[in-house]
Image (cartoon, rainbow over the protein chains, first blue to last red):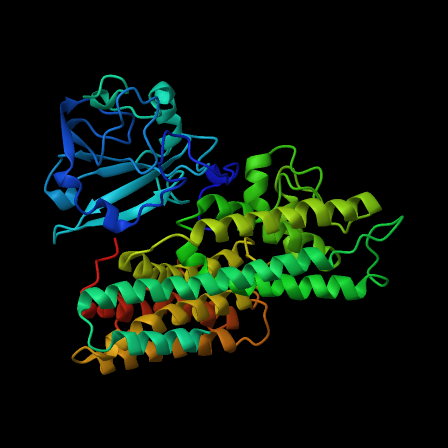
Length: 172
Length: 340
């Protein structure tokens, strides 16, 4: 087995948890992140550190598409990328959360899959890891507690999205 | 099937540009993985079907010998199929990887301190190793018992003792594995993986192998009850080479591609030779003084030491000519995205 025991109780399910015609599940590959710098972005100047996972400083949140007005959850297929502007692009911390749906991460941030990304020197974007948490032996952005689900669980009322500019009901 | 897929790719690739090649390789990789997932599904279904439920008793090693042998054979096929694709599949389906492939000690970490009071149901310890622990309950090596007995929540391995136990094994534990594999198969089928995923599958399978050898020395050996971890490693290599075969026509079309291909093929062959050397399906026993960080010359001269050294070298991208280094050179040759 290669991945963390945090996934032990995650059950495979079926069906999406959003509205309308959204797909039941969406699995992101590297190609899905390549244009994230061109997505709608929300600069978050001088944000404070969030645990040890996200360092303090300038950061930008990117979203591939906004939820429809009045949505109570982000649709399956939503990709949110958080990039901390702490150095040259290849040295920046980049994390993402992808609304995978399909019962994924059912005991954590329901429906969301976590990613660590890296800006390559050629301008493309690589997936470092993905899953319901960091793989065994790795930590989340240097945080030995490694708590993607735990920390984002505090934002369960906003579909596990912590970002202030991405509060459901306030997005325009 | 692999040969047929390979031939199709060769034909389809003629005259196509780099973008087409990338798509073809991504699709070819998916077909290789899908074939193994299907084989895995068949094997676990056969295993469940073979599970005996004798009236009024549990399993009897003599009376149920045929059924137990059939289950072991199916379990072996399941292991081969999964180990050929684990490096690529596990990152996409980490929940399934845990449910189907976690080891007893992994589960007990989560279940501590009470452990798993019912080893035959579909909760607690599950998956291929949970089933292996039941199938080989009468043959658990002493070193494995010694390792596991120190883990909080440990219970000795056992066959189903009653009719209810046997029924539970078939209808819950084995059925859960069938369900988990079916779910994974159904989730994988509609996916459209990209070239980065395909190549990363190759690299991750290479890196996977040294960890498995290393874990043998600490008692965390993978197929520890059946003593078939060496076969797991062979399956990793086979899966790795099968995916490389999808890339191979593209490699051979490149300037100097034939030389690259020769070096990669030589590395695969060296690994195959290293895995064949100990003989049998079991890992050679690590010497009592073994340290993977600073192995002594004496320990490296043992069958385990030689295997460790060979696998470690081939997995190390900094070793010139290693399998890992040659695969990365191929990535550069083809202009593939760098693997972090």
